[in-house]
Amino acid sequence: MLPMLAACALLFVSGTLTQQVRAETASVVAAAASLRYALDDIAAAFEQQTRQRVRFTYAATRSLMHQIENGAPYELFLAADEESVRRLADKGRTQDAQSVLARGRIALVALSGSPVSVDGELASLADALAAGNVDHVAIANPEVVPYGRAAREVLQKAGLWDDLTTRLVSGENVVQAAQFATTGAAQAGLIACSLAVSSEVAPRVTVALIPEDWHHPINHGMALLKGAGETARAFAAFLKSEQVRAILERSGFAAPQP
Image (cartoon, rainbow, N blue to C red; front, side):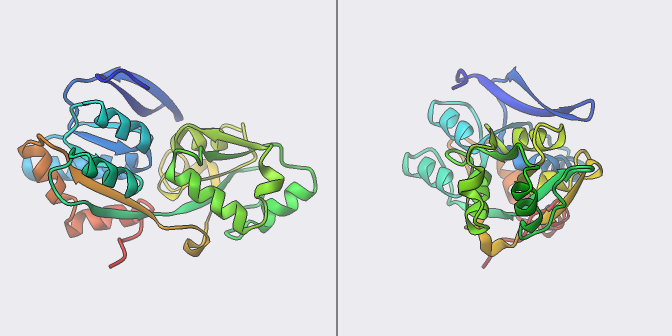
């Protein structure tokens, strides 16, 4: 676990997905890595309208949850699941009711020239695996990452989980899984659609959206944390606007189900 006052920031450098650890003592928003690109646009719109700025720390949801439990000074938590927010609420760490920001989607991606010709039902992955053309498939760690759990469910639905267990490369978060899939470390990857359609990743891969009923919903929960200030409260309210909904949808997210 990172020290309490250290934050794991996920950045794109020279066109590649990398991690950088930086110390911050007053980050306002702790956000799941899958929200990275959408929040860039959302924060820009918020600043333009309000002249208020928010700062983000991006990491795996469980990592951020543990940092908050240990006293990290975040004011708003944007998770990749509802369970982590609920756990913080049960421990008295939140100051408002949990809501759902958006639903995440899973996509199969492969670099141009990969033996896997992507499709939403993974038939091409099954064919490439049967032909001995798949050494590795990238997913986020299913034990701790919501998108990793969804990827495991997708592979189980396709009947490929048992055959792939020794060929999986697991990222500690969904951004690292995307890195494996976009640098040739894996022939294909099951990653967040929000990363697959981003300007950094989309030009390099072919993408197929996985049917939503192949996995449990990936609901991105959110809640203000105890001690949240005016800017965090204003940003949380802004996140529920129609303008933000449009940004999220073009960034690969779906609207929360009523």
